Length: 121
Image 1 (cartoon, rainbow, N blue to C red):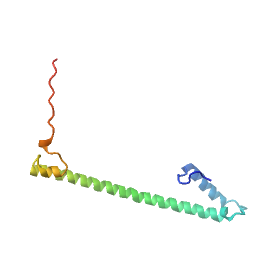
Image 2: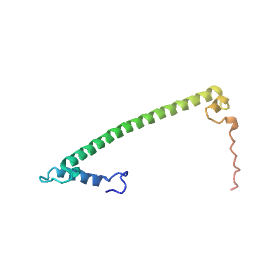
Image 3: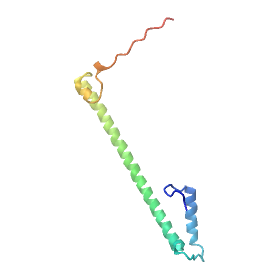
Image 4: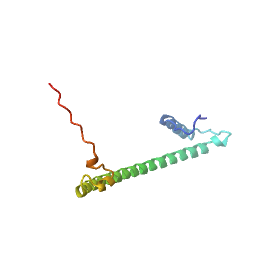
């Protein structure tokens, strides 16, 4: 039995398990005393795994599409807000309270850059 059944099993191990489960059907005299490890149980478990894997792949595709849609909507919002900020600056000026409400520092409140003294050569 596994130590930590919340971690994913590596793909090579799962591929080996799938081929072994398929091979059980080919063993003509496979009749264990415990029905939990019988041919029907193995086939049902393999079918459950494949259905769960297919569902995961379908949901990953849906998630990728949703992420793409979110990224597109975020860029649309960002570009729109850049245009809005440019318009507010044009309309009300670079030192207006309206521009400050949008989260932009007023031009009059910006720290002026210190001029460097030229070095003697």
